[in-house]
Amino acid sequence: MIGKLTGTLLEKNPPEVLVDCGGVGYEVQVPMSTFYNLPANGSKVALLTHFVVREDAQLLFGFATARERQTFRELIKITGIGPRMALAVLSGMSIDDLADAVSQQEAGRLVKVPGIGKKTAERLLLELKGKIGADTGAQSLFSNNNDQNDIQQALMALGYSDKEASAALKKLPPDVGVSEGIKLALKALTK
Image (tube, rainbow, N blue to C red; front, side, top):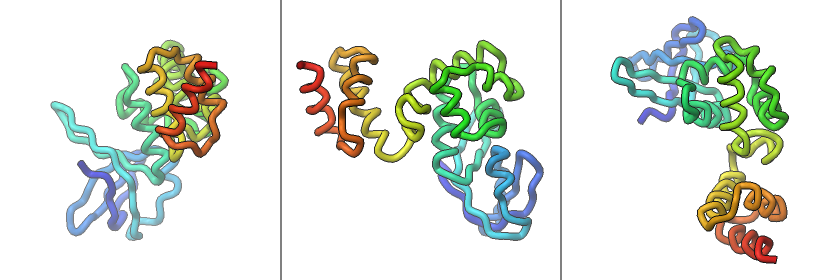
């Protein structure tokens, strides 16, 4: 519903900021990575946002980059990970560190984040594998890798296993489109 706020930064009280947008002040929860890069109070600021509506609250989360927001969205899709826990993960480690931990399946690095126990860390590693991390390219959440995710989903819908689909994806050119990628992947799988 609310995708971006541009206005004047009125207050900074970690992890919350108050942004005045045309006379309306929005309270926005931000990860510490965004918080540290905010300008001084009274300056113009633009934040990408994610709006959460619950029975007992309406919450607005803000991010400096699209990559942060997309990672946040991937985190909250995981069972047992709410918006506040996702914010804690993004505050406790950089996206590159998270991607590296996922690709190397290192639960110990996630346990260092306050509020993340061993079981939660293992669930995060399992659920995020193939979505972020070096195994699919560190930037798999973004740009052209959405095409690769679509190709992989299409192959799996056709009955191929996750492992077979991943192997076929590795043989594709990095900038291939979805329809062409599916054709090439099917050719590779039928050899």
